[in-house]
Length: 250
Ligand SMILES: [Zn+2]
Image (cartoon, rainbow, N blue to C red; front, side, top):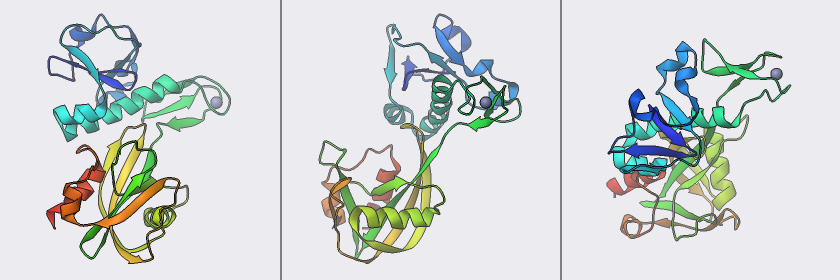
């Protein structure tokens, strides 16, 4: 059983999962144990009311910190559970008719008891791409970051768009370049709040870098030695894995 409070997870005595007796005193908003049987196949979670009074040896941490302490498997497991917990916390009524919704017994959806509409926990796919040109990697500084961090280009997939189209569109919008040879790299759940990051690699094709001036303020192609001295994303992220993949070959 994982215990969430807001967007944080409870850590106690070096553990992030607990037995029943460990959380008997907590005021629960909800627990996955209340859900129909099929839902019990998913990792168990409880959502507790804020603020949570912490005992000795307990702390609440974000999921990036969880990754640093427990690694990829724990991060992935907690990411899914937190997204379900957040969905149950935030969405309680049908968005069509305002009726009450209940968890379905045969899948991981919820259904309106009045109009029968079915809902699933939201997932927002985003593409993230490492673009190489002549042994250098495209990195950009996002205006939302208040440090000097640089990363690969990322953006949300729009409705009706194929992933390759999203890769081309984002790179064109943000830095005015065209790319070719787009290849799938890997994916990562990213619960901030509900992204699914889809990583790609690509080669520069044409154009001169022109940051869009809004989302991207600065961008350039950087060699491996330069990148090793730069402020780049946290190890928990697929952005970092894409950059490390480049560094390992250069
Ligand atoms: Zn309804």
